[in-house]
Image (tube, rainbow, N blue to C red; front, side, top):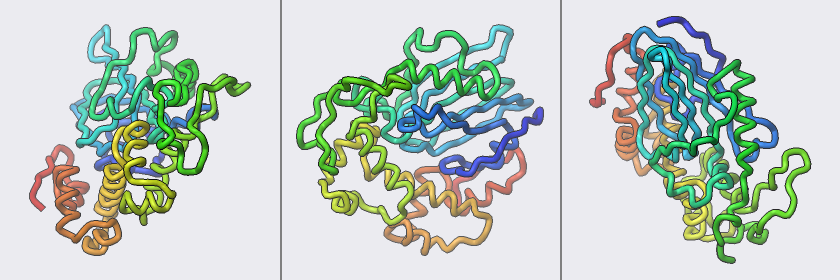
Amino acid sequence: MKKCDTGPRADNRGILDPARLRREVRFRRLPPAPALFPYVEHYWLIDWCLDAPFEQRVLPHPAVNLVFRRDAADAAGSESAEVAGVGRELFRITLAGTGRVSGVQFRPGGFRPFWPGPVAELTGERRPLPAGLVAGRHPCDGTDDERAATLDALLLAWHPRPAALTAAPSAADAPATGLPVAGPPTTGSPATGLPAVDPLSAEAMALAGEIRADRSVLRVDDLARRHGTTTRRLQRLFLDHVGVGPKWVIRRYRIQEAIEHAAGGGPVDWAAVAADLGYADQAHLIREFATATGVTPAAYARSLNRPAGASLSRPG
């Protein structure tokens, strides 16, 4: 492998064997333009120059991504641009030769204003982006700053819209805060021309963020009571704006925490971790971990110290 340096990344959630990822490719995250902060969590850039194929596995977040890829496998190279809905299964990708990826990770719920329908219709799918969406500089061209600026320009030109413009929510779907259902915006931001984030999108993003940050959120009915709403309404809200239900979001974030525990490098009290994360018992956590990643927690922890080229095995 040709050595490629990378900057630090504070959050490895969902990335299996992040240390190996950093050794093999150049991976970093950049912030979007301030006007896009309400919708976009970060941009992510990957450059690689490999002597042998490299497989990376990721347990996806409950978030939509835009992915622009350019491979230099031959003189002409090859390009792709797609929207990736929330992935329910473990995602595997093999990189080879030389190439680049520039990606946009939206906040959970943040892609709804950019999409003309419920985000659930994208779940588990990867769809080509419309021809002509990328004009001028390609998102994989240039320096890191230039790539981020290209992504900024692309998204700012997309003109995100409140969900009320593409669907007609009922009064029952009004945010639990008591705010009315958003209608078409009359004016945009003087600086960007973008409409303000509508209350439903803002609520979905805030609730998903609460699930991620607050480890005490273990049940949808408890979350609903905390916010003075119903589980049925939260289910509709999440499917429309996030792409998956709130129970799935809770389970995904909790299993990502379990992966972080397994990667900690020291002994783990799995019975205590299971109780802390809301699992019935240790066996329940181990089954969920193996279903999500393909290996048990113990096998995953051992794999982090395996020699280069060794493969994972299922037994614990």
